Length: 194
Length: 194
DNA sequence: TGTACATCAGTGAACGCGCGTTCACTGATGTAC
DNA sequence: TGTACATCAGTGAACGCGCGTTCACTGATGTAC
Picture 1 (cartoon, each protein chain N blue to C red):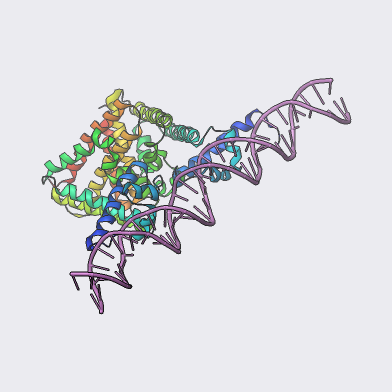
Picture 2 (picture 1 turned 180 degrees about the vertical axis):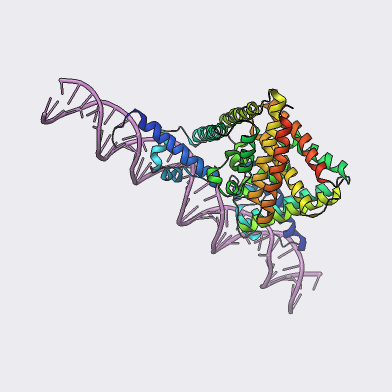
């Protein structure tokens, strides 16, 4: 292979992270093999270890990357409660339910994250705290109580999306999403200062 | 091996279901091998296929069994809102967070359930609907709107327990549980007829 | 009552396969002279 | 300007291992005679 300029290897690593994120969210972490991940990224299995120490190392990096992307998406919304309402409606939509690969890493992987290495759980905790603190700031809410209220509201969103995916009855699935939009917005409004 | 009485094989099947339920909830479905499951149950790998057609078949039977147990547990609580409050507090407790193996199958496995066969998702949908309808009946609530409200409240409980397990900061984990008790009870009270 | 046999839950070795990981090798290009 | 060489991202075969599944076999007991 060619000798590349300085950014090339970094770009390949980023490409592996992107495609691995999608794969992991669709098939699970245990359900996705390194060889398949690399083929998705247009490479062969052997090249993996030039970019990551191990699959565990990739998992931690991929969680960090996914939460960075989610945070960036949220920072692009209009400020205040209006942007958050938009977020809640998009999150609890049939499109998000049916598009795991492009969706929220928490809703697709949280069961497995709880079983991962200390490093991965650390990175998840940091990423989620950053996101929730951003949301609190947008609402003008401060302090640990506001953070807890927003984590609780986010928990409802994660749980509702997961239930809507697990259930095989389309009208029940749609009903769960619709109801949880109302409930999530109620909890979020209660977290904003009056 | 000995020739056994009529109940023997049924009892063995039940033992496999119990131990598999615990294993799957601790290590995940993809993370638990048939040989290990059988060793847990005091048998060797080959005996498995005398009881189940495949690992997929076991997974569906195990989800049905786990939800049956959860439903039986709920039916043993005192009737009315008092029993439900007790359920919510036990569900969102540090003991449940730290005891995946003995806990709620939804909180441990819902990500994976969404990726399972049609048969497993069918069984999950039926089991969850039965549980939620029982809760609605206890509250004296009826109809699809009450069902949706209770599914939404249960989604909050599932999501909050999962978040409390995924996060590596003990005080954040405890804070999420404490806050979500309050929020879950608010949503459940709002689902009861006035 | 005593013995030969049918039953069948469970055993354990073996199957092909994909897993995570290692490593000797390739080959296009930047650099040195 | 032309050529030899060092670099290093990526290749692809191979490693030991555990996976889900199959199957010929075992052996204690109920039943037939």
